[in-house]
Image (cartoon, rainbow over all chains, first blue to last red; front, side, top):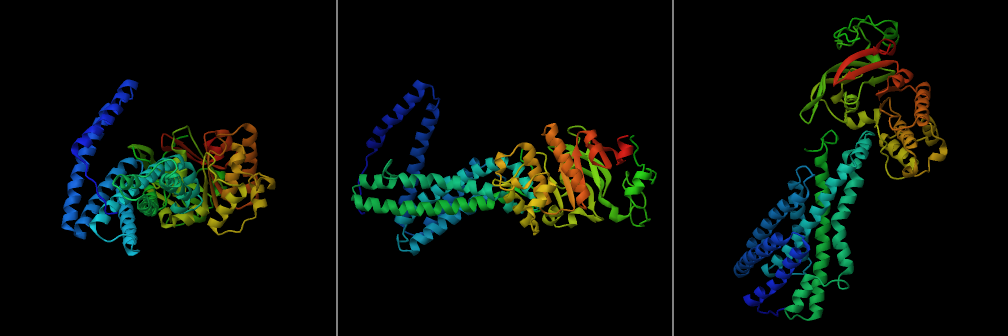
Length: 257
Length: 259
């Protein structure tokens, strides 16, 4: 796994031809995405370049504290980003922050404790980034679904509360569906991996000259780790966020404006 | 008919039949109340209750007494009838004023236990996925009551063949009766019914009304019923609370309010 390759800036520049193709298709078919494609290209360039330098600094410093600081920043911005997908959920930031922290902490902790990776920046930074990124997507999808489902199921939930059920009992079918939504994408893509698409890590390792066996093994580890982190984040986010729909007297709060 | 602050024990014999006066000294009557009511006879007492939604008052200065027996809350759409009903088992709390149940402030009761004693059947059926029996069982287990499914179904006007029916395959009228059965499975002392027949045709409405009439003969249960139909109030209740635009316009025995 020690192979490394060098990529020149002109190679990156040349790949912009495909961005131009995407913009041309959008313009031609009136998809009205040229501006977004331009923003996405510029942002990805700036963000990845900055992160590249940050990672280089952290690798050079070789201290776990800087890694933890970077992961904490990722968790914070991940929770802010996911909150925008969960607008119908009252006060979703807290549950998301806890969900991402727990998913990142538990997953990385287990990976190190089981001896899968060494606790060094070279492993913790990229794996942590993937774990938190996927946890963010899963919890955002789960809470987005939770918000919609709580809206749709208001009558049934209130009818169940009217029988003296607790908020948890009344919301449980809804929370279950939201949790499933958050997890199903990764579960499905894990099922079809290798058949319909090659996952990013494996592609990256093959391009970097690693042996296919190593590439596959690392990819499998990451897929399994991600399944764990996605489950923890979706479970934590839904289990905490549904409570915000209820008052302490188990009353369904009025929907926001 | 509108007589604010008319409490004075002069509502006539119908009121006397419902509310036995014994001069309870600590009882302060509501504007629509009677001096000297026995606490046991008064189910709910509302004092200057107000509730806002979306910056607008849905209920304002609602003061009324609801005795044991069958009470109808009547009034036009948007009068606040359903909102008032939801306050009675604490599915919502008022922003202003006080509500008491059997002489004790409503918020001194544990809300979940209160809702098992005062069961609310909403306007539209909202059963849990599964069979009628699984819904009855769920409700009975919540209340810690043994379930006699056949008797419960019979009280709700359904025969026992309904027990194993999938709720998704029932008509709206049958679902509404299953909702009534589900509430009865908890053996509540008070049944709050929100427009129980509004979505039904005449035949289904008659079936529900017959079930309710039978229920009152069979069980010692009080009913508070929301209806936009004064005729239904006449058929099913003996006490009437009339709301308009979030306020009480009249409250008293059926014979006097809906004369």
